[in-house]
Length: 177
Picture 1 (cartoon, rainbow, N blue to C red):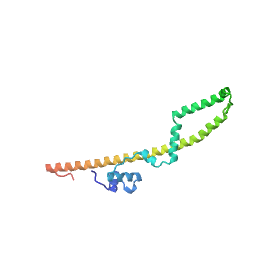
Picture 2: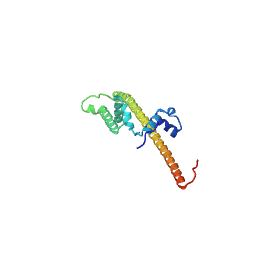
Picture 3: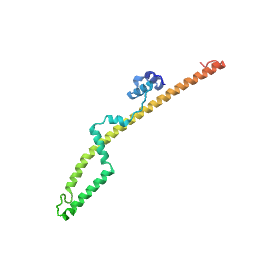
Picture 4: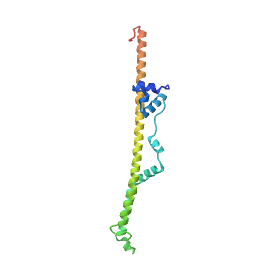
């Protein structure tokens, strides 16, 4: 079990800086190191905690719009539209509802693009936020790892010095001071 340490002392010992001069993330990591608490968190869960219903909807629309299923379905719909309006309806005795050059189809495609593009951008912005959260978390974990390694190195050095002193005492040699 690790004893709880003073984060201010750890900052001076391990980083050579005052605790108050550190960034908020560094202070938070030092507090966790001092308390011996777990640092790991799921960045996706953190990002989902900040997500609104609109954000989640944008993610869902972007995932559908960026899938092969959507592309294939959309291609089939376009092909059917063009075939029906290129004479297939005339053969059935019906009139074309969007004759060549397919003005109504162009309007529908333009409206779809006008709605889909901003939704995809919103989803990309959310992904960028998730990436920033993950990067910040990685930084905290890496900093904590470095601090723990420094703590262990200091402790090993203290133990080695104590062992050398014990050996000198056992051999009756004078200390190195």
